[in-house]
Image: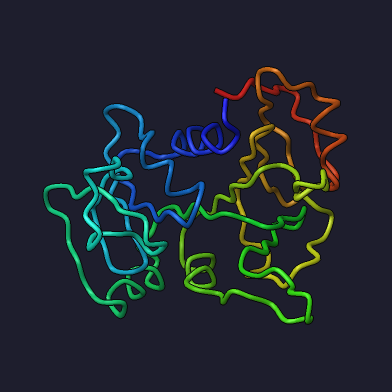
Length: 219
């Protein structure tokens, strides 16, 4: 299975009935296509949308109805559009139950770096966007990322190397290999993918892992 699809599908299993859920760029927004049956959530986008559906299919998209990343979404009955002031009042006011965000790096202290890569001239780009507000405003933060870089380097670190988006805010990390909970004692490995061994996850993780006594197979 495509790694990003697997991550999105697993992330959607964290949705519970009645939740207000914010989805970040990339992998997170794909989870809107895999909301479990009979689970009703209200999706929120930081550019000012409340109550939308999955990603629009090719040929059915409306270029004027997009999420914060410019990806065309489907409109649901009762959908509401509003300005950025209202959108960030919802976020900063603690009305978002879960935010699912992409990550460049996450570490064993719950720190996350997800907004910038260093350019050749030593500067960082792009900008922070709404991540900072979401990370401190949402009740639960889920970081989604492929487990390693293209060069095979772990993205789950002992300590983040890139500029942080927020400190100590991540509650759960979901990769194509594993589901890891951030606890006060460190990173608790709770699930591993069906075809993956425990040894492989440990080898590909820079951070120290606490191995759960009841490790499950990722659904």
